[in-house]
Length: 112
Ligand SMILES: [Zn+2]
Image (spheres, protein in one colour):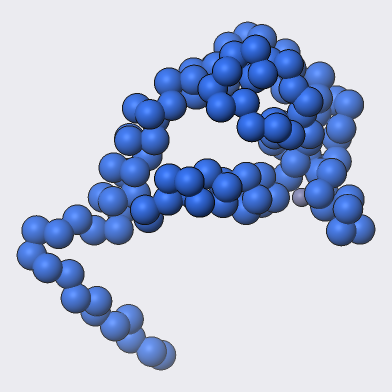
């Protein structure tokens, strides 16, 4: 029913998608430790944590039952491989991880 209102964008200015893509690229460049997530060690940790905590701990705190699919570092590891692999970890559902954890990152780096 309602037609989408055209938003004014100066000629040559990046679209929202372009800005998000640049943000991601910059984020990756700033955080080479993201490669730690690709290691066999992390895969093993992830498997163990999710087997141990199959339900999202933050959902449980709200009285909800939701499978955990993301392993979160309880304490910020700041790219330190020792902290990265030492934990502690918690099993979260993706919505909780994205909402709570990425908000913390965006609070630091967020320029949209
Ligand atoms: Zn949750």
